[in-house]
Length: 346
Image (tube, rainbow, N blue to C red; front, side, top):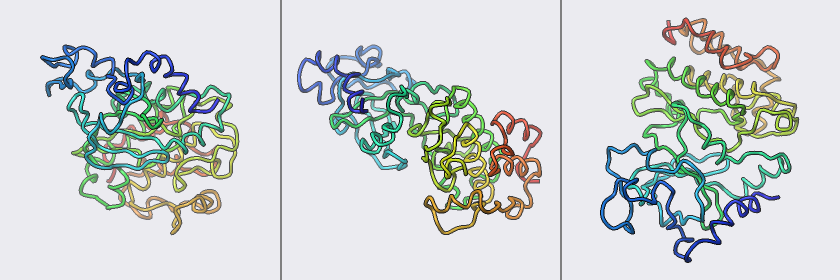
């Protein structure tokens, strides 16, 4: 069954009961908005449900998949584009139902279909199901998910008013992260450790998928578009997805995988955060660049940052070891390795 067929099955009952075309076009409201009282609104219940500013945004949403198709352009006012992901576009928007600023992730249906097709018959959870299940302070919260009137899967997410870690690195913004680098690394590890504890492999760990808080005191993990369960059928050889410069050798070579593919990508992300350089010097950014990851040894992180705490430097280098058997087994162990480190630089 294709992704489209699956989605049609999920939403068929809601579409049959829709009272008119107007509701199908996107005016069906989330469960949390059915009652004006629940949304914090007063007066005419047919008017947009705008909540007081002191109501937590998460309390305004149903926290599940919406029934019926949603007209994205009618429901949301696009304010600006933001991150472009592997299989989606993300933009900042105002939700007309709540008045709140949220992130809207609109998935590329063709790319999603192509990705999901390789797991046909394996009962793989969708990105929406995975994202809704992630409840951790260091993971951007997904409020609701649904299908647009154009049959595009979408997610309504927590908006974090800060840059991606990728932008910090590209801008070589030492002033922003110089004093908080160690805490950012711990946040990266703790959020990914939670994903692994939930039984999943993220498969696209890279600085683009971490959003910094405005004051750079911390960050949050995003994007579960390539995430798969950490079970044998999904760890079989052949799944070559991810961001090339952060791909582990076993992914590049189409070998069998496990959670350590994320550990490798995490290690490379930490390396670039500390040095603003890549461990493998290349002008390429495609799959060919990733072929170096087990052909050439990575440049020692201390070459670029001799002032790093040696314990942190060793932990990062072990995390991105090209040989799986030499790589840090888990993020829990990584966190223990740097437990005594009090500042990134000595």
